[in-house]
Length: 235
Length: 286
Image (cartoon, rainbow over all chains, first blue to last red; front, side):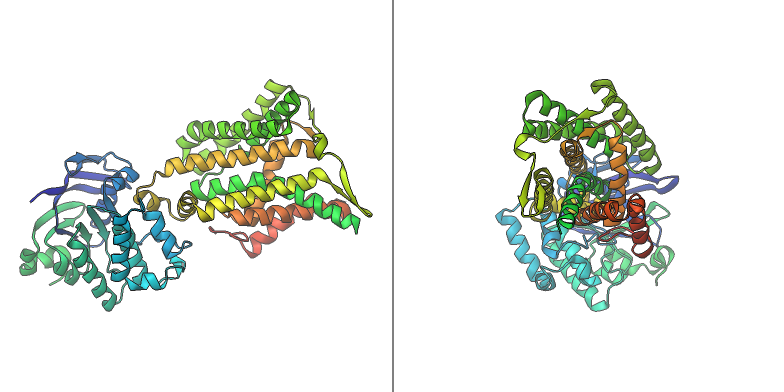
């Protein structure tokens, strides 16, 4: 299976702090790769490093064979990588429609088709189309954030903790959406909710203290209680 | 009655000039998080270059075009070589832009000499209209009209175009805009250039209004512009026009009715806003 994204011994410093100390993983086309680990392990910084928001201080990041580790954020995004940040990154003073328009790279038929699909997946966005993003609920903001990353023909989506702070029923909806998107797009998912991660994920990587310490098919982690207890603190 | 109308027109005209200076300042702060203390220098350079072209060619509109061009060029150079290296560091921004302000003021003296330069409105904008007992000075109406047109144009661009949408989004979350594949640096440069051009336009319009221009005028008006930005709310474009009109009108009325308080009125206004609404009237940031 084609490898879409490959990180090799990536290290990242934020100010004086050495957050990522050697993260390596690969993401295969068409799969959902889940990054797991305790709070503060470096999962979010790993996604931000891929996007160039916290540039790597060493190591390499290859996307479709091209080294993107030194590229500015907007160029990384233009390569076809969509990003859903942990805080959702909604432009609170812009309407839902305007949030979508900022994200749209073009106005062609493919984008229109995707928009129609998005509005079917997230009917709430249609309902609040002319309302400011800041007035949406947490779940609706999460849906808008995912929709914004999905509206363009991105080949890879980086999604950071989509279930965080959401009610179980909304988490289920987000999970269904990720399953739907998986048909068309490769996904890297950072997730603390193991139930969600194990349902949608194909492969896992565990990050601990800024390093990748374990990986394999998700099935393996589901069966390995000892590993879950050791690195994730769950039985 | 005629006194009231004249004070109002005078206040509105002054307000529009301050607005042209403050609007760029507030957009630059809102989008780029840059405190540009050299903005007044761009205003003064607009006044000098525009007046020089106006008096050399005899065409006031050539002067206006020249001032705008000067603003665009100086804005480009300032953003590229002065501001860019100090993004994210407010202390360095203050120091370097204050230094640039002094350099720009002194350079005016080098190029055009240390003396004040006189300017008067072109013949078609000179004089006044008389409506009964009320005398309306044409040039003041012209300044108000230009100010309103610039406000409407920028407001249209901000509200109704993709580039305006991106600027507004950038004011709210720069990182997210970049993550959506938009080169925010280009947007920064464009906003800086437009802000500088608006300041330069304000400068060239001021020259025939006040009758004289001098190298230190940039600093004097920059202080008023900063007051306007604080009152209107840092980063708020509509806030800047409302606050500028407020400052212009209060200055005009106080100078007539309570001259001893005319200098203090702006400070009092700003203090009141900072006490009761620290983020400003339309502020996005506290």
